Length: 446
Image 1 (cartoon, rainbow, N blue to C red):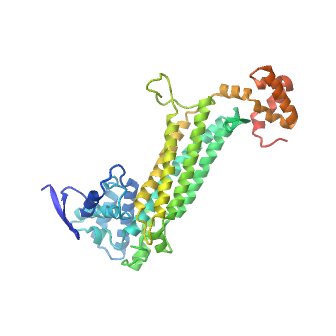
Image 2: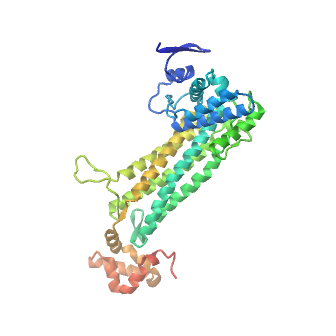
Image 3: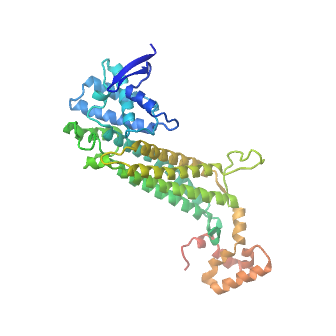
């Protein structure tokens, strides 16, 4: 009473009586005992959308009975996207995940309409894993990109606010981690925000690469075993229910065999990760030297009382490293496809969707953290006044030779405040005008 028997062409298998899936999923659970990384929730949700579109197209064209189609559609809307027990790293180009979705939808639809709904004959009607799975991955990726872009926008906006807030604070720039010419603290944060502005633009543009799908191409992109009118209608239905600008590929054999669009998108994610890693590293340096103070969010040591570490930045930096590693996985998987299929889309999809989710979370986390950053104006003024490189701002008035003489003479005094020395030598009015934030950021002199 605690089991039920199902049969496929390999023979019979006992399943738990309460299992919502069928024999194919049960065999996959036995074949791939890989714990740790499940099929992404976003992938299951996107497969439900694809199955819904296919059922609507088949019903409209008379290939699927209304009662069965309605029950499948209702199941697509009702079922839990977190319920997939399968590991992401499965063989078969995603067939096990596709069949899991077919089986759970069939079981729910059968109970809904009071008649048997077959996972293959009804839910998978006119479909192959090879057109359903890549299409669902593109839908999941587009939705993931949009969620990520909203978080990148939040981070960009937060950094822009700090740019305006710190615009009046002169500080010293660094090149090679050594004092360089002066600028404002606001300008540094403006550079951070511009980097993420480009990430927003790139994310928006790369969505175009994901809008072309191979739904209707069935096994190898020829549409074999699918009606012609269904092939044209299925993508239209998917576009309607998702609200995404999807289009059927002109060459479905190409769209089925090649996964280079995912590599391109992953490269955009890697660029965002590079910016995240760089900006977080810079914020750690500015915090270490005292120019800014990061929010204190938790005790930093189990042995050193009072120590506070930049843990949020370190978390975001680890996300960036993970995304860069995932880009290698996506690239490797795409290049490992053979002839008319890419067998490694499950790993590719897992890595790609994980990168989007991680980057979105990290950017949102950093945006919230950045809201608590404060400038240490006294420390900025002290370092600014002590830096010999502020003399560079006086080159138009003094020339390189005279500026060098001032630096060498100051070194002989043994003093630490170079700005005060310049005021004594050149006059306070000239120094104030030359080292004002407006002059430092004026983009050249007149």
